[in-house]
Image (cartoon, rainbow, N blue to C red):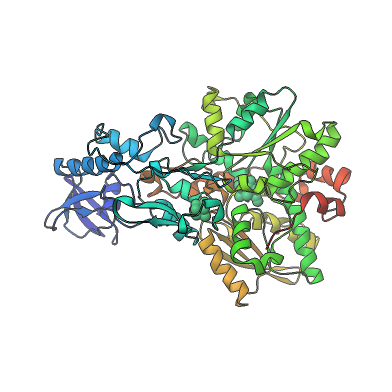
Length: 574
Ligand code: HC0
Ligand code: SF4
């Protein structure tokens, strides 16, 4: 351990800590802008400069290792003046269009300007850069007029996802963040994951907003507007209303969606259960009949696009199952429309997802079981938060409401989809019972839980050796995919989620300030909420969901039936 003094307080911290860590341990928040742990550790923005007695000049706290007996100061007038200057320089080349900004009130630059009393936005008045906004992508908008060149987005794309389609172009005053050859984002290999959006401290990156279209549908008396909400939204949405990270707000969310005027409020967890029936069937079929193995999950649209760009040779391994979002949309416009006698062209199908890539997924080809798009609009958790806020709904104090039935009931297996390893565990619960014909003694497959980037396990299932791997974050997925490609690993079943930690940490979830994200594991806190929900469910295996049993009995017949294939499965493009 190391003992040091920060702002007249004695602190003891583990070896290897930086001054930023040590100050945090002492309850002091040193301001940062470019530093995002494990994403961008370049020590470039100079916001975190501090004084260390005996050191030459000021030090960058985010990178400076502490040592025994060190004496540091984080809040002297010299430092405050330096931070003011840094901020003044940034805002002098920023369009300061705060009122029209999606990050108004949730912007790290705005917060720091307030904290250091920077109000003179033209202190260094002069030429400002002016950029056109890149709205080419179906998921992400890039507005360089707000960019502060912190490079957190660049780090997210490169280090978390291993993609690196955005980087700094030009030099000096002309520097801007863009794609190679300045291509529109839609023409690059961007997979729409939104990890760059979640990393952005300001309003330079945000999702393509679909709230106007959804509000118009809700106002239209001729439309029957249904909504489904993804597993992870219920452990993220509360953050939009000041609740602690990972708070479960399932019942409040249903109540809010009803109040917003949706005609039916359904649950993607239901179709997660449905996905398991189809995917477990596909797995068993491939194992027994010599199909392409490993089978790889298909529910994460960022991962699908990545596979199409970088591993097209592995597309035969990817499950043909549509994602739960798309299965839901397909079931609403076929089974539900037919059973309830609602004309398909009256139905507007909306989803709420922790994801930006789901917007892209809605528009993919062969996602139109009833001849029209399965899902019409996909909103992020943040967009739903803004609709609820605009409606003046007192979210935190809302009396809880259940989800509508049918298509609203789920088992514990469906809800854990949102955490990395959840789809694997849910599939194992069903596949193992199907193969062995015996009831599982313990439904918890803890080897595949947790936030590690790559997890592996082996199970003996009725004499059959089943090797599984789970990867989240595309840089981690790459390791698993390369091992499959080279033949080094012999997996039976592989789960891949594009975002690190899975959907709970999706690019559409509420954005967590770096001053928090640098010190807590947001992924683990949100995942905990999902596993709690699972634990408290009376039914924890997808094939025991009574609404799913009924759906097969009255409509699809068996998992993998011709009708199921037509409605619930899809193809990919090489
Ligand atoms: Fe997910 Fe999904 S679990 S991708 O991670 O599989 O976005 O939460 O809705 O579709 O269910 C996201 C989350 C979903 C889907 C489900 C899957
Ligand atoms: Fe990179 Fe994902 Fe952002 Fe696209 S959406 S630029 S892949 S981080």
